[in-house]
Image (cartoon, rainbow, N blue to C red; front, side):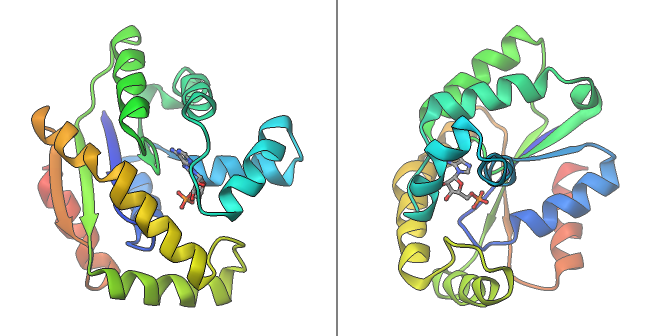
Amino acid sequence: MMRIILMGPPGVGKGTQATRLKNYFKIVHLSTGDLLRTEIANHSTIGKKAKSIIDQGHLVPDYILLDMIEKKLQEIECKNGYLLDGFPRTIPQAEGLDKLLDQLYQQLNAVISLYADEAELVHRLVLRGRESGRSDDSPEIIRQRQNVYWDQTAPLLDYYRKQDLLQEVNGIGPVSEITDRILKTLA
Ligand code: AMP
């Protein structure tokens, strides 16, 4: 049973590592960015609200994310464990998640924080923007998203360090080597 949070600034490789860890542990990969992009593609009420916020590189309101995650964690496929990718991103989200975990009698195994040099991250995201066509991967919005990370999400590092859950892992290097580093910290 593995319940993991994967954290790190935009472009650090969370999505890539999440896919590998999901296959390794046979757990569900919950990417709130992917969930929101699906809502947008479906033109749902949430999608309509989220679209312009995401395109500007800002954060979607906490209550929307907490609602989404609450529903997801109660789904049967999450019973064997899950990996949260891109959530929580603010202190209120982390507090909301803690409350939810208490209600579900669940505990996290670890919070993995991938780190990398900022110049490297921006470089990676500009490349990804060319390939993926993601509307929030333009240089200006990338910079905005990095700022949001340092302002609103980085405080979570201390939050989870205090809970003794935080593991910081170097996100630079070959993909499989980074996976090995993560697995070692989880062992
Ligand atoms: P990601 O794919 O994780 O980089 O997320 C893309 C965008 O979706 C972010 O820049 C936010 O606008 C939005 N988003 C994803 N997860 C969250 C979250 N936990 N809280 C607020 N906004 C989010």
